[in-house]
Image (cartoon, rainbow, N blue to C red; front, top):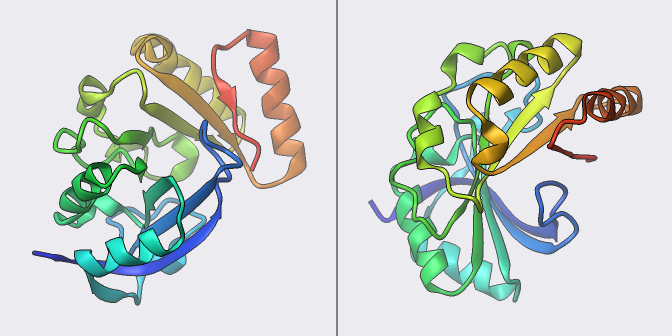
Amino acid sequence: MSQLHITEIFFSLQGETRTVGLPTVFVRLAGCPLHCLCCDSAYAFLGGDWVEIDDILKEVASYGAHYVTLTGGEPLAQEACLSLLERLCNAGYEVSLETSGALDVSGVDNRVVKVVDIKTPGSGEMDRTLFANLDHLFPHDQIKFVIGGREDYDWAKIILEKYKLTERCQVLFSPGSDEQSTRKLADWIIEDRLKVRLQIE
């Protein structure tokens, strides 16, 4: 299939991950098999348009950017996503993929920076995390936890140690939406001297 179900394509500054602040083209794919309580893009579950991959590449090129992020929804829920990732890499872009961690990442082009969620208890989808994905991560990839409170934080610390995550790749802790959550999370990270990066969105 040479089409993808797209919610939007837009040009903005990256708000998270290690390329934060860099001009980036975002390709947001429609649909997701998960319904996380902390989802910030539930509008991508419905609607959208079917767009040819060639047309996606033309629109991405029109912005003249070096960085491209595929996000969702859940991009890997559409098989043609893998072809788009490969073609973006072949075109010379630095490409990242934001994925829920619930679907197999083994088929993703090795040049792509995979940003893989590990779902915390507060997400309501903790049991959907596919831990086998950890075996397909490279040092340039990133693991992300959304920390909604102390329960999520304590659980994430256990997972960090159990799977030696900071030895695999960079680990991101993303706080809840309010300023107080960010400050609390920062304090916990400092107190425990965790080798993780705090995302401030």
